[in-house]
Length: 154
Image (cartoon, rainbow, N blue to C red; front, side):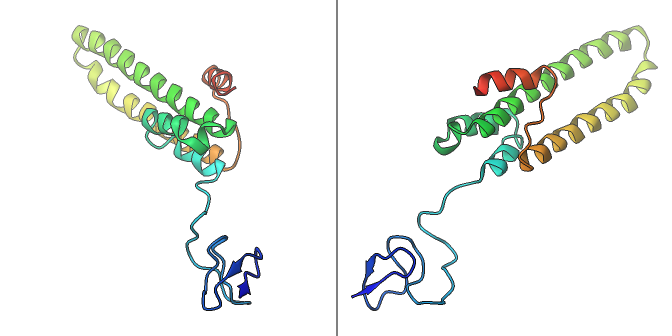
């Protein structure tokens, strides 16, 4: 009878991998590439991924078991949801405003195109910035939205 050098569990003499910890039973041998009980994503990676699809991934990380108890992940999931909703509301209001002005004067549509592109680029770059902050284990709070997210995360 042999014992695992990592956890001390009894293993069969011809076994190359410990059934308890997943490590190699041969001294000095590298560990296997995948381990059965390996944990999921780290908090910073889950927080960054919560922003990927906005509302959808935010909700996913709020209901998945290991992450729904992590305050850091919950904060970024809520902030992702609120940021996405704010962008959608802004886009609707922006379209209504410029449709009204466009009906008054058609040449205003030429003015809108570069402004709309700059605003879209700014929102996209800010979204990337939020993912970067979450990946670096920072709780960057968007004014007003960040306070709501912190309150919801507990």
